[in-house]
Length: 232
Image 1 (cartoon, rainbow, N blue to C red):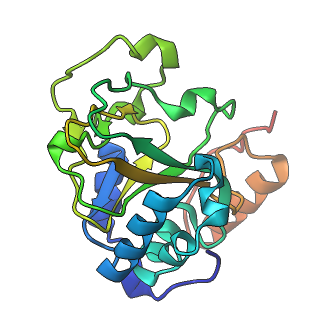
Image 2: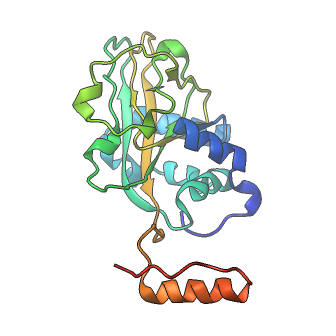
């Protein structure tokens, strides 16, 4: 998935802002139907483990190379994302037990980790089929996985009811869970988790050298600063 896409395929500022606030962004029917038909058929026939599907599939990696999908990925995690893990999740027909709320970030030991999780629906996932349930804004609260499992039916929660070809991008800290499937059709959703490959700049105490350089730059621009702070 490396390599820059054309700017027109990147997400808009509004879409990025929505993701920052809500913790998820849904791109409805972004994958062409010919790919969905291939993927749905392949998922139904697949006999391997869910964690192997990314490696064994003939179509799923083609989907994530589509410019409109690749552009969304690059908007979130840059041009050289790092693969974390993936899984083909399956909820059998008439499976009436749902998951409890959980946040995948709780098993991440990085203090400021940021990953995205792409949920791809190869077929229609109506409400009665139990598509993934998310709680908008919950990614902003650091929690314990076991601590949120007892909560249910929270105001504002949303089922990701989707048409075939929809991809929902989730912040890895958002509360989510699979729902019961009350239909006679098995539900499939493929999840791909990625993290930024580029080194990110973080705020830190400036060194004496950087402080001097900053003062020199400001001075050249005619901006007066107070006494330099000594670096720790």
